[in-house]
Length: 252
Ligand SMILES: NC(=O)c1ccc[n+]([C@@H]2O[C@H](COP(=O)([O-])OP(=O)(O)OC[C@H]3O[C@@H](n4cnc5c(N)ncnc54)[C@H](O)[C@@H]3O)[C@@H](O)[C@H]2O)c1
Image 1: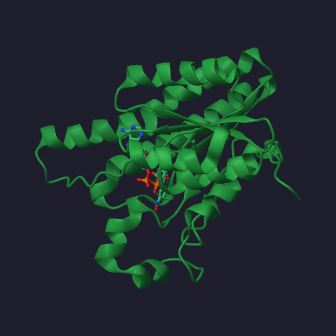
Image 2: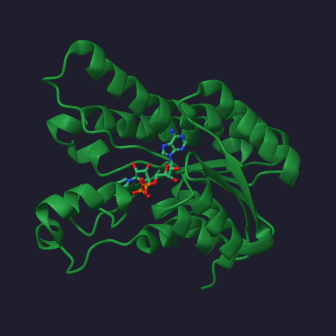
């Protein structure tokens, strides 16, 4: 079976590296066009865009600034004419010790929620408005195993933000299915990206592998394949579903 995304216009947030880069690369390989969002590293984002060629367009947007998020979506619609798929992948994992003073802890909490959940929520709202006018579309929200298993005390905000992504996605699937809008959660476990680098550096890859059922670490491309499949429309009747990509480390 071939995943066909020909002529589909797809927004991929956080596409300058890691999982987002792998998703954008596969989408273009499957025939789609991509709007690549990144935040800080222009050089890297430009390298990704260059590798993907004319089917990719680059957008800078800082998701900690709510007002920028809406204009980003409007700009993509203006440039591409229509959007078929929204993939909310951008995210941060800030280590935040609960022993910190309240002010610093709440700063970490709010930034995490702004980038990981609030921006995705607004993009979903914008996508729903857009899809309702034009025969539907697909939303794929990248959550995390942490939404279900929980995380360590230093990553409570991260886990909470990802739990929010799950509830958001399920609500969209239930509310808008009749209007052709499908929504899915993809929940990775531990994936070899820069977000996971600190952990690997501290504990080593063997330790990371001992926590999973398979014998190699999950790569960004392992996540990208599921995302491309969901984006293609081949799994529409699984709308509202969560797809775990955690190498059997948390089966629920
Ligand atoms: N790597 C893992 O082990 C893992 C596990 C579970 C879930 N995830 C989730 O997968 C997604 C991608 O993770 P990754 O490992 O590829 O991360 P990464 O750190 O490699 O990339 C994150 C992306 O998010 C973007 N981003 C960061 N801050 C931003 C901001 N303020 N505004 C806009 N964009 C911003 C960056 O530009 C980058 O493109 C995230 O949502 C993450 O929570 C990752």
